[in-house]
Image (cartoon, rainbow, N blue to C red; front, side, top):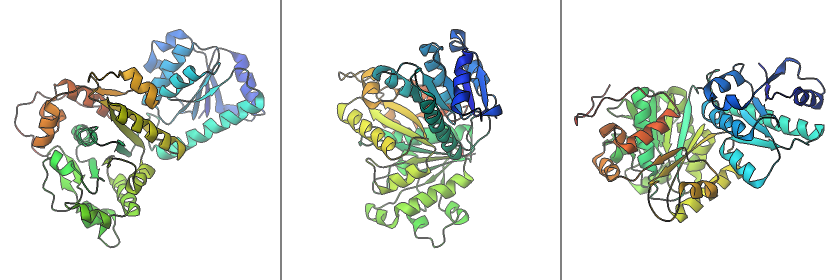
Length: 396
C-alpha cells in the first residue's frame, strides 16, 4: 500500500517529500502524473489515484486548482477514508472552497521541509483515524455505518429526512437497517412510520446486562424491511435512558446492522453527543431561514472544535426553493459546507408524514423523493423503484 499518493507531474515535488521524510518512505510513496483531462474523467482518475488504498492523496502545485477541487469532491464522496491535501497559494476564499470540497490540508508551495513533514504527518494521522472509523475494503464501502441525522433548530425536517433515509436504505438492503429514535422526549419516528411499538428504547434501558440478543427483542419491524427502536411514549421516561446507555445501544446495533440511522432531538444534548461518538456519518439538516443557518454554522463549529472531524458530513438543505431572500450559495458560505442534497418544498411531505408513509415510498417519482434518493445513494446503490400503485408494500 502506498500511504501517500502525489498527484503531480513534477518530479521535484516527489524529491522534496522524500527529503522531508529523510528517504524513509521507500515503497509507501507513489507519484501519479495528472493534468486537466483528469478533471473530466472523475471516476477513472479517482480509481487510479486510490487503487492501492492510500491514506493521503496530495495534489501538487502544478495541478490546476479547479481540476484538483473536482477530484477532491469525488474522493470525499466515494473514498472518505482518504485524506486530501492541496498544494497551492493559500487564501481565505481558496481555503473555504477547498474545505467544501473535502480538502483537509492546504499547503503553500514555498513550505520548508520541516513544515512539509509536519503537515504530511498530520494528514497521515487523519487518514489512520478515518480508517479506524470507516470499516470497509478497497471500494471505500463501509461495512457498518452509523448515520446520525442532526439539526440544532427544530422545524428543519430532521425526522422526515431520517425516516425517508432509513426506508430508502432498507429498500436496497432489507433487514440490514435500523433506525433509533433518540429524541427521547418528543420523538416522531413511530408516527412517521405508522408503527405501534410494543417496546421502546426505555425497555432496553431498563434491561440488566443488555446485550445484542436482548436488544433485538425491542425492535419494531416496518413493512419496508426496516427495524425501528422507537422513542418513549412519555417525555418523563426520557430520564431512564442515560447518555452512556444510548451510546451502548447504538454500538450494539452497529455490530448487527449494516446501517444504523439515528434521529436526534434539536440542539446538542448529552444523548446526541453519545451518538456523535459512535457516528461514521453526519447528516446535517438545515432550511432556508437565517436562524436555522446560523445555528447550523454553530453546530459545525462544535463538531470541528470537539474532534468530530473524521466522520463524513452530508449537508441536506430542506425547502431549498423557498424564496426568503437567501440563496443556496449564501447558505453554503455561512455554514461552510457544500449542499449535497437540496430538497424542494412540497405539500406532499407533511401529508406523507402525517399519514405515516415516507414520501420516498408513497411517491417515489416526486422531485422530493428524487432528492432523497440522492441522499440514499451517498451510502448505497439503490435499485430502480417501481411506480407506486397506491397499495401498501408487503413486509419482506
